[in-house]
Length: 380
Image 1: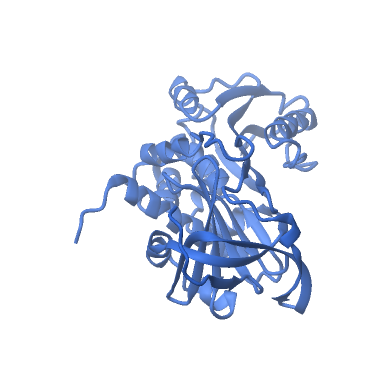
Image 2: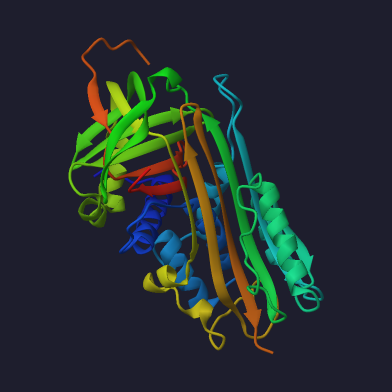
């Protein structure tokens, strides 16, 4: 067996994290949904960096596969995914990322954590008047998120989520806009039936005839849509029902599928779609073994600041993803609220791929494997 490099292990762990959280978020779902593994992994990774004991072990196990896994390498993968370069095709890519610790006025954040945060993309510590003006602090955080996400996420934290007991809030925000390397001709877009949960309905469906990455294996058709600046979008179309196929999808089965695609002349039909979702992540995280950080008597975030009984009261997440003929635009944000007590020419016949039933959709960084967005499209 060939040896597995550190980068491959980190990418595999990130895929495992992505699919594990996806299963929990999609469990019993009857509508389309979207979330950002990149944003959630960034916020939880920063929390893990400042955590100690069982609090850190549970987060590390979820993020990198074991309590002894390298959070440093995990952070390096996320950092690599913000290094996008224009390739001269289409509009220049736009990527905005921020990682901010909002700390209550008067709290002394440990210098070690401030230094660690400074190594993350646009990492910064900001003061917030949680004790004296909690709603003002909430509005300031939301305004910062709205700025990073180009106003696609104007209110991540709702009224009442911040109160005088809040001592810190860790926030990641992400915005990505990138053009397809091969745009879909607008004149080719037209209505076509999509077979969703409520039956067949006509939806605006794009068409592209081009050589694209493709593989059909293990019950899936996989199409890789290259975008500018080292970004790939991946359509995962099951042969049968999405729910059954999704339940068996693991990092061990997905990684080979992603690696196996080869250029194939395709006649691709893909719906335009826009999906948005907002979630409180606690049920999913608890189901995946993250408990201690929610316990006021056991949580240990002493690596962030010397505040007694600092614990997590909520992990909020929101994401939106739009796909059209020109490219993709997505935004996401995650807030962890902590309280304290007190090609070559291919002339072969094209393979026709009709994405006309529920499917999964990934947006990932080509080099590092970091997954910016994952969507479950039941009805475009």
